[in-house]
Structures are given as C-alpha cells and as structure tokens.
Amino acid sequence: MLSQQIRSGAAGSGSLLNSVDAVRNVRAVVLLSATFVIAVLVSLLGAIVGPLSVVLALSFVVVAVAVAFYGANAAGLMMMDEANGLPSRPIGAAVMSSLATSHRLILLLLIIGALYLLGIVAFALLLFVCKLPGIGPFLYAFVFPAGVVVSGIAILAVPTVILPLSAPAVWSGASTMGGVSQLIAVVRRRLLLVLLLMFAVGLIAAVVASLISLILGGGIVLTGLLSAAILGSDAGGGLQGVASGLMGGLASGGGFGSGVGGYAIAAVVGVAVVDVAAFTLPGLVYLRGASGVYLRAVEGLDLAAEQEALRARVADAQARAKEFQAQAHATAQQYAQRSQAPAAAATSDVHAPAFSGALPAGVIPAAAGGCAVCNAAILPGDVFCVNCGNKVA
Image (cartoon, rainbow, N blue to C red; front, side, top):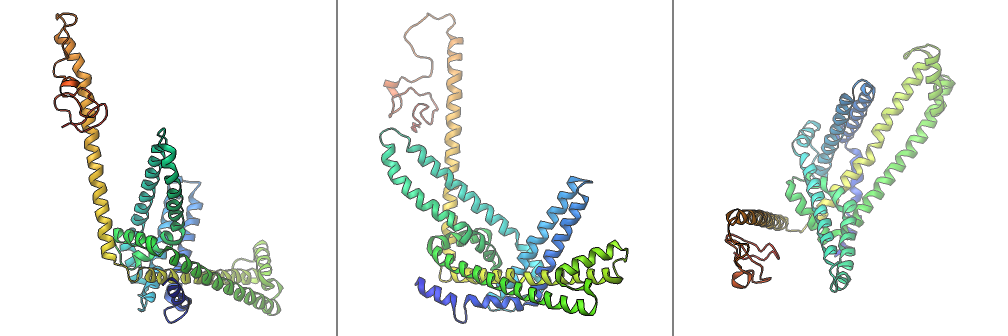
C-alpha cells in the first residue's frame, strides 16, 4: 500500500511533478511577489521610524508580518485550487478568502501546541510516578521505551506533517478542530508516507530554485556584457559593473535619471524585479506540492469520524478537569473547616475541665465512623478524606 502511494505520488497524471506547473500561474506569481515586496517595504519603513518611536516601529513590523501571512495564504488558496483540478481563483477573491479564513491556521497551531504541552506534562507525571520506591524502576522499564517512541514520533511530526500540512488543511476548507483531527489522523496512520512525499516536494522545489539560479546567472552575464559594449563599461559588466556604475553616478552628482548612474539604477531595479519574481517560483512549487500531499494523505480517511472522536476526547478532558476542580474546591473547604474547628472548640470550652476525654464537637472518631481506607476522623459535610483523598460522601 505504501509503495503504491509513493509511486503514484512520484509519477503519473496526479503526480507531485505536476507541482512544477505552479510556475505557469502568472496571477499567483504576481500575488506572492507583491506580498513579499510590500512586506519588505513596510519593514523598511519601520526601520526608518524606529529611532523616533519604538511602538510605531513595532506596528510596522506587525503590519509587515500580517501582509506576508495573509498574502502567502492567498497564494496557497490558489495552489489548492490547482491541486483539486480547478482553475485558480482571481487575486481579489484569493485575498478576501485568506482574510476570512487564515485565522484558523493560527488557532490550529495554538491547539496543536497546547496538545504537545499537555503531552509533556503527562509524560512528566509518569516520570514522577516512577520515583516511587520499589515499583519505580519496574515502571520505568516500560515508561522509558514508550516515551522514546511516542516523543520521537511527536518530534518528527512537527516538520513533516504539522508545519507543511496545517495550511493546506485550512485552504481545503477545514475548520480549526477539523484540521486538528485531520493532522492527528495523518500522524497516526500515514506519517511515513507524508514524510517521503514532503521530501520529494522539497527536492523538486530545490531543483527549480537551482535551475532559476542558473538561468538568472547566465542572463545577467550576457546582458551585462552587451550593455557594457553598447551603453558603456559602467552600465554592464555584470553585477559588479552595475554596483560601480551606481556608486559613480551618485558620487558625480549625475542624479538618478541621467548619465551612467541612471543606467546603473535602472539595471539594479530590473535585477531586483527579476529576482523577486523568479524566486517566488520555488515557493509556489512548494505550496502546490504541499497541497497535493495533503490531498493524498487524507484520501480514504473518515474525516467526520476522526473529528467526532476528537470532540469526544476534548469533552472527556473537560469533564475530568471540572471533576478535578470540584475535588480541589471540596478539599480546600475541608481544610478551612478543620482550621476553624479547633478555634471554635477552644472558645466554647474556656471554662470546661482541662480534659474530659471527649473529642471536639462535630468530629467523628476514626474507629466509630472515619474513613474506610485510612480510618481518619471526618467532619460532617466532608466529601473527601483530608488524609488520603478517599471520597467519603
């Protein structure tokens, strides 16, 4: 089954190689390029106003992060459309959908983080139990290997499933809890499959990035040589000529639009535009591939049943938490009553004999009606034994 999934994910009409087609989506390229450019410009503005106001600078940083986050998710929505075999939605529709749904990704990651934290706490409690004398080493012989396997899977799931597939789950229309249940199901049943497929996606994106680097390198060299021959040596000569032309034009006071400085600045702007547009292509390939891996990973899973099981586990955990809270509250009331009982007895027996052999009022002797487990005395209204915690009422 696994080998068939891998082969179908490496070749064929529905293969991961189709993610390379993402470079042909001009609207997605424009959207992701504009996202990065706007985010960088806003960050630069924040750096400029930083000496004036730290709060204002942080505001610019927050805006830049928001632009990058929602813009990348909008491009991801377009890639998910392609992965489903549909035409990608227009830029405006993708941005509006991202603004309406991308917050689910943040909530999903927060819930996953909380689950990981609860798992760490539960494992720590097991280790504390292993400190019990006598039985502790025996329990640790089982806790240690179980902890190694579970923690290893949990750590591996972060870069292979949680981070790359969380966003595609939201792009496909899953709710926050639905996305959590889907990721848990994928980790439990198809972790190895997703690991291999995401490795293939990363390899494809790296190959695309390498090819783009070769294309840009050769193009810059040839264009620079021709520019040097026709426009002048300072206007070409590759990146070094562009940089030297820029510095020479500015130093000579030629301005930004005249002489050699103008050609150099134009070359710098052109190279920047090409670089931004070109290096968004590997990102789109990765987003397209991650969308395809997500669809393949959840194919055949009973997502409704997984989500219902997660809801049941959450409800059970909430019930246990409420029960623990009630038990803690009752125990605190017991301690408060016991702290008040000696003072009340001392006040009422100021003129009584020094000792008459009687217990304070309201205290039930242990032998007559105490705790069934430890035989400790209890007070009327006690729900739990303050000595051993046994429920007595």
